[in-house]
Image (cartoon, rainbow, N blue to C red):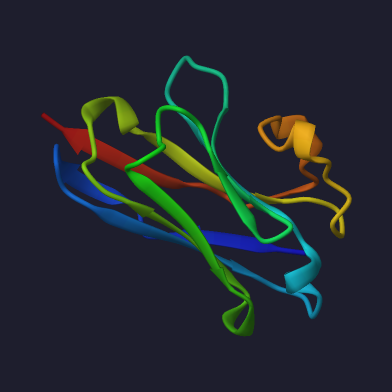
Length: 125
């Protein structure tokens, strides 16, 4: 599967953005999907995931971000509200290999097999 992330930009603290990740392939609905981010000098960190239809969030994004998917459009979204300067990063969408991801691994980047190219989000104070 190929993933194409978009929707990043430069915003001010408190603003909102919606990221999109369009996927190729006919079996999109069988993939568990995740969003990760990576700030300069930092490791890639988990943001949110949809695993078997249920949503999961990192503590830093809980209550502000919402992950969703539209299987008819082969797209997963990340709605980000109340953005903070510390949310500044390159955001990546990821997919597992045909629904094989286990729940205990959803926050691990190495558990995902496919990655988009990333979309940059900059939040100014």
